[in-house]
Length: 250
Image (tube, rainbow, N blue to C red):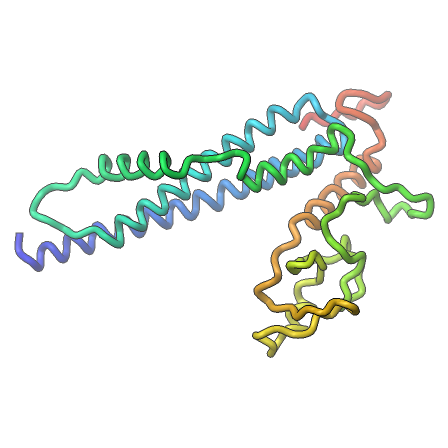
């Protein structure tokens, strides 16, 4: 095989590998969607005290975590192969090569459920199925639904929009646990790429755009709030209990 032919062959292999890496990215996106659906089910379990079903969903999360770990590992192996591959006169068994590298990588870095943040998030949410505590003050109106008393954010209102945290459309949280409306904090930080004084009084620390992450805990609380509204504030008791005919099969 000529040098030109080797270059063509190498280019074709690298293009194929690149396409496979993109396929893995799409797979990870799909797995994220599945996890989001499981977390919605977890909210139902917490509100309806469905402790008998927690184990089933926990197994789903563990299996999902293992599959996600394998897909990410395969993605890394493919990227490494694409960076190091050189065409030769000898035939290459890519399947065997990938399988061997995957096996070696998974042995070196196996999936560890105890380190899976998704599993930790799930267990935190379904703690409600076994006695999760909520605040229910006498002066709350119908529109002010139950809020978790062990919330992981600091402020009750966005310091820039002055909206209640659970009313924010696109909440983001900084490294200290303060939550903001994304559009307002981005406007606040505009033209300050190196950071700006924290917008909350008494906080002696600058804030940068890189400090901001989606406030997943707030989004979960908002989702749970909507579920409680749909189910009459979740006061019907446990799964399958109650005098009414409405039964929610999660």
